[in-house]
Length: 372
Image 1 (cartoon, rainbow, N blue to C red):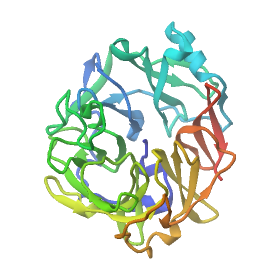
Image 2 (spheres, rainbow, N blue to C red):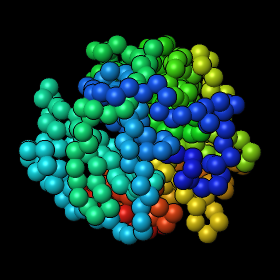
Image 3 (spheres, rainbow, N blue to C red):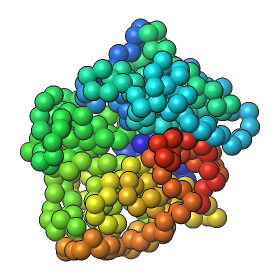
């Protein structure tokens, strides 16, 4: 949940959303110094010059924070913090079972990790931003006196609304399901209060105005129907052939290509389903990387591990428009990265490794792993 164009493979560098007007602007334009407040925290994504974007899903808002973390990492060395949930519990004065890590991102400049953390459960939850250095030491990021700016989503679901998908819960908490930064836009997936509630939006940065999002329709092979209410769970910007696109993953588990040029405010777009990766499965996080001259996609899931997908086949893949029954798979294939078990979050660490958060018997480990 945390991509930035300057650190991803060459296929992404050429992506362009709209004519860029903010690239020469001061990135902290419009920011004010003071307390950055959150009702909730996560997903996260880094932008330029150490600026961190943090979603406040309960408030249906996005906060840009000038972290001041702009000192380049001196050298690349492996990172491993065993029992990170226990260490955070000690840091925050609670027990490990009261720690919930919502997202993990890496600052591409300093290679320090930033964690969106919930301390407590239920009504007692306190959102906290934590930074883990390359030495493995953790600290709370003070938000009482920071430069920051805030963007409110104009068409978010009501606070107590039931998700349009029929699931129990608060639809407001899915107003933002994933974010990324690309050139001069913050890309946001989530739900809106529109009839076609699955929504994608691109907000210009520095923040000025926030328009309505684009309603997204996809064909879900495992369900055998077109859907407009299930949100994108995780996505990455990626250039498919000559087409700047998004690769987006949904629950249960369609993989969809969306041309960026079609993502215009207030319109509707139909995505191209390029893979059904198996039902009863929830995508957790996604990155792209380059190895031996080829671009690959890594997709972490809650029931099928980490999938490695060769992106070479995406351009010529056919659109899936017929039911895929029995939990079957169709379209773009994948291989399972067997050594990466229990992965819940991942981000690019450097050119040769990823930073992952993975669980084993209730213990969480934050570590860098060589890209497969």
